[in-house]
Image 1 (tube, helix red, strand yellow):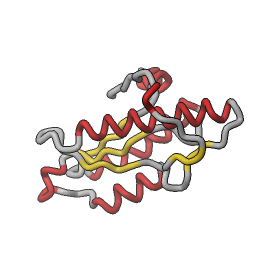
Image 2: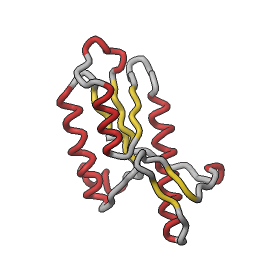
Image 3: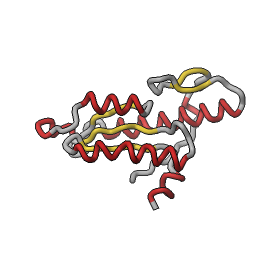
Image 4: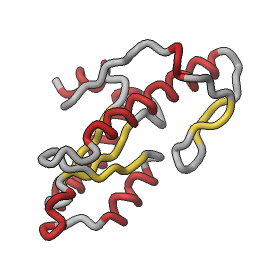
Length: 140
């Protein structure tokens, strides 16, 4: 069932708890599964470190999250669902990444020069987002 969601998803928020080392260690498995199901080397994701309001219980340092995000060519956003810190920003950033990825794919199919650098940031023939239709987000 999870793979079916992955096949139809246009982008993913990979969420771990900063208070759970185990949840952080499982993220790489999900990321690899997404790439395998999508048959891609890169796919739009945002790495989300949740429960930033529980700093005193932190088991996963911020620098480890940043390193993992760098490996994924992604962004790291620390959030608190409980206190609604950066939750909306996570979704906004995911939609931006999906749009960027779709434009890259469209541009490459038409011979354009667009791609991602080592930091996961787009470059090349970027168009404005104003003409884009909305896209859906899938939460697993």
